[in-house]
Image 1 (cartoon, protein in one colour):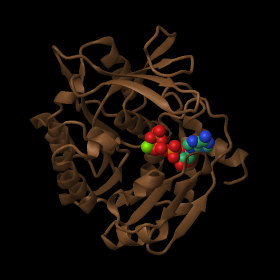
Image 2: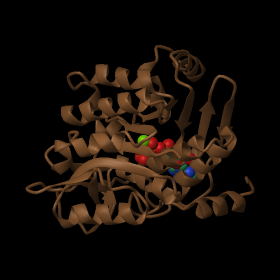
Image 3: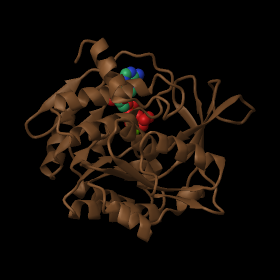
Image 4: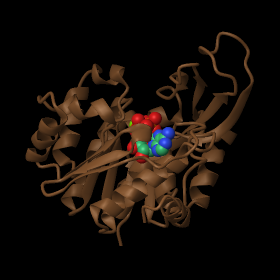
Length: 314
Ligand code: ATP
Ligand code: MG
């Protein structure tokens, strides 16, 4: 039985209910919603009934418990979430602008999850896992980067597999040592899951076809490109697949990529055909955008099957 691990930020997200530019005025807010890209990812994995765990840190506060309670209820092994006694759980305030882009105020590096490092407990947890998912957003502090690299090496050394969603904020790329860390992750990656232009972050090639070929030649087994409401594509050495997105009403796009990745990794590890894996991932991403709150649209397998069947794609 496989067990999926991720490491990184656990946050609450607090959302402005009116569109506009940032937070320089008082605006109505809704939240706290459980959040953090690795947390959203692992919650969707757990909801699919797949064994999984997250290594992170929260403060002993309500923002921490709203996350721990949700993850536990959805089937995630929470034994790797450490509570920092004097710490505060991370947060993200988000306001959608009129053009659909997002203004954020983050508290990550100086929150409890900014102090993640491995302990005897979490090292033992890593050795029970067979797959490591690296989330680019989690590379926000040197000790977290180090923890992720150690976990990636250990899972791989024990015969496991690695997936990598670059999901990078551009400013992260210029942090000291970051390019080296990213190359180290990429060298261990079996499944690479960029969104749109992120495909070109690690390739010299300028066209999609050439960049895919270049990355596969480096030893990556499969590449999945996320394309928002247009769906997604899958590539390995034998197969090239494009699938359009499911038609849904978009309420809140945050978390779509994380849910998509979770469903993809879960069904890929289960050995389904690439076309079926991609359908589940597309369905999970589509359902994720229909609910306000980044983790609120995570789905059960029955919910994914229902969406796939309703649109004649089963
Ligand atoms: P995130 O903001 O979570 O980082 P992302 O950029 O990683 O998102 P997207 O490409 O926006 O990822 O979305 C991931 C997947 O979710 C898409 O490939 C698609 O399957 C699905 N998806 C996203 N938005 C929509 C939508 N409006 N309608 C249908 N499906 C969608
Ligand atoms: Mg993304």
